[in-house]
Image 1: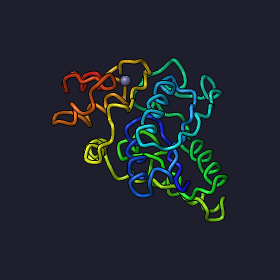
Image 2: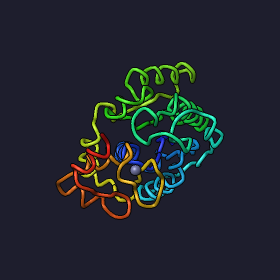
Image 3: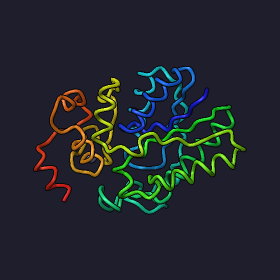
Image 4: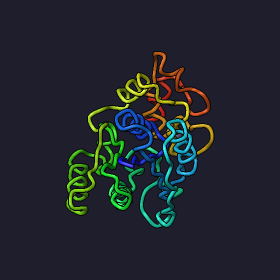
Length: 227
Ligand SMILES: [Zn+2]
């Protein structure tokens, strides 16, 4: 295996997986699922497995970091706080996930670790910003004597561009899951639902992403709920 994709079950990592499979072939790619104790991780990881199955890549995990729940700050890993904005930050989460993925990649001889951070994430999450990801890449390269690098192909794209690119590539958006609340039906109002609905608003993209996994409400309604 050449490439380890951190696959959450959401849109961004699904597009990363599609890009890696396109570039290297399914046999050279594996998907790594990590449960970091967030309330939506269970359902997300079910989606991740489905996406991995769709692309016929090996699914590694899910590895459980359940101890993060209730001991770290952040509304995703506690039952309190808002499910949008700064409350949803799980401090340094991507450094933790990337460290595990890089260690695993080095141990199985893979040279690439891929993470789906995008330009919208960068506003809220410091560990999704390009400067952090470059530092993580440097740390991986130094810490593995140049054997493993960190790749972040979506860092310049906003969610809308990801939705469009994925639709062009035939990414099975209906298999992905994005809601922070973690219920079967997406809540429609959390930060993740807001971003997803905004990405798919209008056009035929909405129809392609529907199914049980996306809840389409009116744009004005969403803006109100978010603001
Ligand atoms: Zn939601």
